[in-house]
Length: 143
Image (cartoon, rainbow, N blue to C red; front, side, top):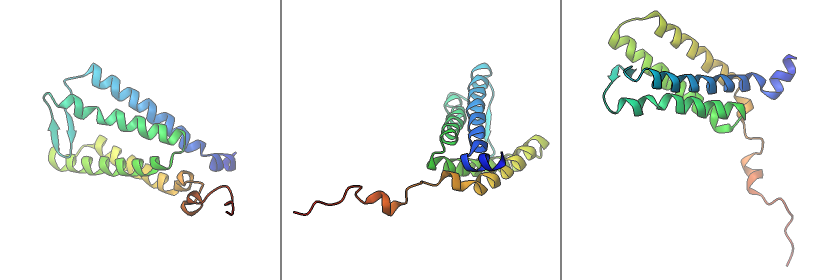
């Protein structure tokens, strides 16, 4: 069973389904609690632009989820970049708003997740090498 999971990437696909679910939950939270002011990079985002800024989270979660479900090569880079974005933002929030155990837990689980995704990066590799992708699939006809 472990070998099948490693070969087919079922673990990454499960993470993809969870990302889609988290994106849906993000949308519900944004809709049901519109007054919630998001904290990004040590700044509280409020006012008329807050709604648009808050929508970045479900959008990226849906994209990562889709990419993980179908093992798209771009999903690996997006997940790593968004994880770095989250870690940096939470570190700045810790410095600005004070230490909080929930934020520390988020940072620890995000770091562990990034390590795991980096370890499983081979699943996201494009199966056709660039040199082979550029060559013609049919032999040249001599003239």
